[in-house]
Length: 570
Image (tube, rainbow, N blue to C red; front, side, top):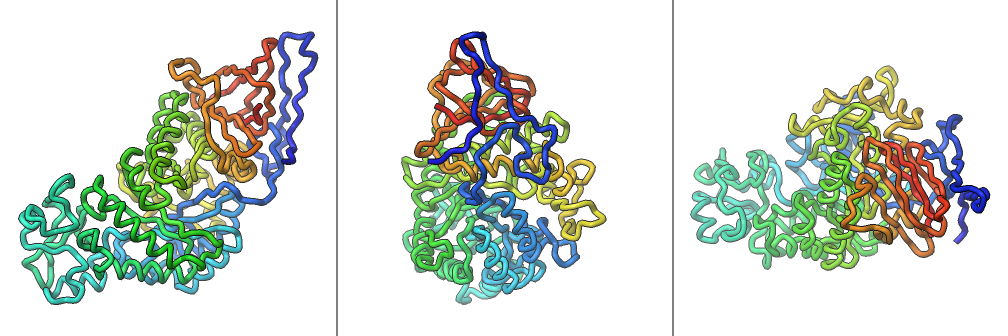
């Protein structure tokens, strides 16, 4: 394989005790160029996006094309070049269906688009333009519950003889019906059983009944698929499957499935995995031959649990979000305790591989239901800006298939405990005077302002910005197959019982003949890291990492606070 690496000159090893490497300086950075973070030269990017990175878009808050301050489909289409340049190969859209809420998770029609977001024709154009840029489009698909304003629920609640009555869960005495085993969706053993706060009075028609909503909100009503072994025969299942086919026929590349451990109410039983396996197989067989990219159906599930509870679900779907990796990474960065993070990641992947050999481990930082990364790591000062950047660098150099929540690439802030709206605010694209795509209507921008965060435009001109950190490490991941889809291993000098240099994370990424050593210092203090290798060549760094070869033959790396370096390694 051809390589274009910077030559490392060792000047007179026999005459001096140590020799320092002289990196390319960046005082005269071309801010329009691609190499905006590192002082070392990487292989030129060949325009092949290898990394498989997805970008989550909260549609309402991304880009407004028509001046109503609400993000829409045409706004996303207008920003596809931005996403392409950033280096993503897929976008996940939060629910675009007609809904009674700002967040869209109470779906009223599974085969249409909320008029606030545009039309089906607008969506078709988005698909066409995204595919032309090698960007997949997956839709958030809510199969646990619907809106109480869904026409099927309205009809079902009005009459015991409605043809849609069995699509939902009704009971006059939920506690007794659950105890008697009359409600197949809710386990009598091993599950949550009867929860009074999950039952709501039917307010019209069959008012002596209650309906079930797992998420403790009367605006949701749970679908009833019946016993899992008979779910295919249920009207609810057939409706959800046929509605999904509607989107596959239009060219959608896959689905993100919301809250899948809550479909059946024993999250650790085989019911949900069995249901999801059936759902995936039915849709994947339909999808065969329809893919624009000639690929299997992409379907990813949300199981908001630790790795050990996620692993059994891999028997059902190819991909799941990895919440455990973010929990461990947040701890590692906040406590300057990063040495064992790669070992944790390897152990999680071993669990997943034991269930499914072709698993997709969807790594992430924050998402629309979590405190934003920058806020979770401590706030808005310079120290926490460093933490934010190192988190992105680790995400984009580690194993897994990364997801980036919109706005993470500019370090947006927001705490979930002050309301979900605070983690779903609009991106600031340009200064207010010229920003024609800015959103800000439900939710409004209360936290993310120009003076606190800056804009995409202003950060693109700052070589040390969060934006250019993400852009740079995404470019590296797209350039080097070892970073994109290579294996991870602990370096041979790793000692589990040795707590020295615990603030430095070290791991090896390898694919075919390409072998890379990745180092990250997650501390606010400088760290000196020493290791043995026959030869190393730096291909990228952040925050001016330097290295030298000692007389002993070992390499010594000096890592400033919140810094990273990647070596070609032998």
